[in-house]
Structures are given as C-alpha cells and as structure tokens.
Length: 158
Figure (cartoon, rainbow, N blue to C red):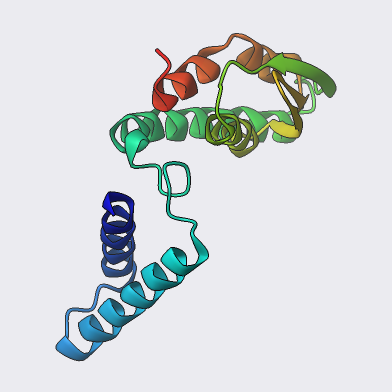
C-alpha cells in the first residue's frame, strides 16, 4: 500500500511540475489520470519494492547533482576533443566490475555510464559491465570506481 501511495505522489508531483496548470478542471483531469495509472499498476501487480523504489529516494536525490556535474564535465571534454584535432581519440572496449547486488542498482549504474558522454554501457552481465569509451581518460573515469561507489550508496550497500 505504501508503494501505491508513493507512486501516486510521484505521478502527481510530476504532472504538476510538467503541466504548470492550476485550474480546477485541469487539476481534476490530472487527478483522474494519476488515479487511473495507479489503478492500472495495481492491476498489473508491478507495484513492489523494485517497481516503486521508495527506499532510494533521498540517496538518489543526493546522487543526481553529482551525476549532472559529471555529465557537464564529460560534455566539455568530448566537445574539446571534437573541436581540437590534436586531442587524442582512442576508442576502447573494456569490462568494468559491478558491485551492485540488485537489478535496479546495476541498471542505474549502466544508465549512468551511458548518460556520461564519451562512454556507453554495451552489455551487462552478473558482476561485470562492458563499456565502450571514446578515450583513455573516459575509461579511467569508469574504472576508478567513484560512480560504482555512489550507486552502491544509493542502493543502500554502504
């Protein structure tokens, strides 16, 4: 029940933030949409600990600003490499260890790698993720383990 309430609150907040409308008719239509979506999720039996991960909310909110700063730094690095032909581009494919225990943690890690320009998560197997990097610095950024540690903290392992 707590996960259904959490889903309802998240959908309501998302609807309000994205719509920005506060007229009675539109608020009631938004409430009806949220109610219908939660009802469908309950009927499909997808509201559980992993489907609505309330346990990672606060840790996730602390992780997102760090991830955004890493994305900005990687964007600047990739843009410099594209603009300046003297900077090396040496694509590589390597395996990075994954310390997350749950599917949710592993997917968060793989998606965070892919969101960071210059790296792409290609394959995810138990305990290892295959990553394509644009240059050695991007590969070192994944292999240093900082992102892995932060995702593990979000997951609740540390």
